[in-house]
Image 1 (tube, rainbow, N blue to C red):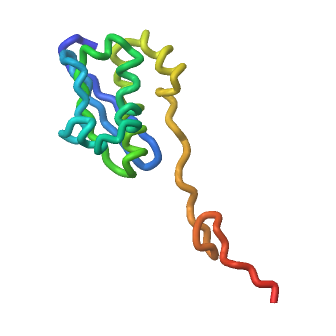
Image 2 (image 1 turned 90 degrees about the horizontal axis):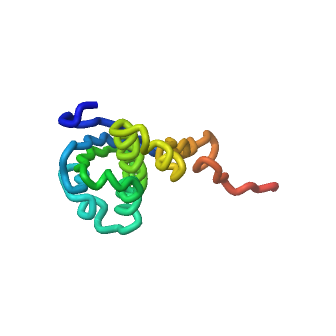
Length: 133
């Protein structure tokens, strides 16, 4: 990768998809859907921490800006997808970051999805009350 062009990466979790654009120069600002990360996630500290964790692990990542576009799912899924996208972008930036991010579990796509609703039941596992007589 050249030092002047942006790096693109995609991350997913549940039904959320996040596209990350890593800009070559910056001061570590994270923007989600054209809002600061703290504002987009309503100041919920655990979700803001989820998104920015890869940046805190990789010291050199603080010299870049991150523009994220997320859609689908809820707040928790979007935060996980954003973390996955940022991690993938950092690996594209420098392959040396892969070991630390893999050890933290940020490069693994979380396969857990909502279980489908079954016919004859109100929800996926919940059943209607059974009556013997």
